[in-house]
Image (cartoon, rainbow, N blue to C red; front, side):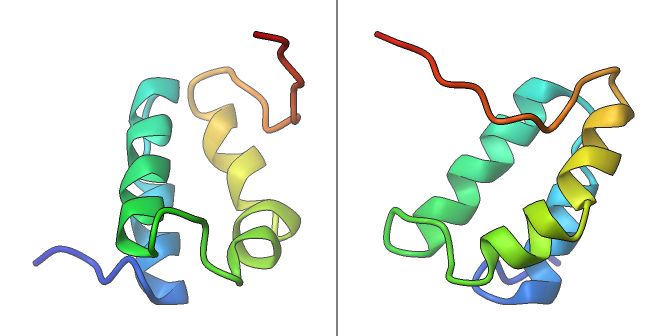
Length: 71
């Protein structure tokens, strides 16, 4: 069963399962798609501030630092 990407529990579950940066990015896209093409209101608190993004990125030697990229 796929987690409900409109709930805190579902989003946390799918993001914690990310094993690569590419998978993290794909999961971010799926969360946004399930929430009218934007992150849900709880995203920053539950994924960023909680440390989940940092802990998950550490699995593949990455980090959760925000980067600004000029296009």
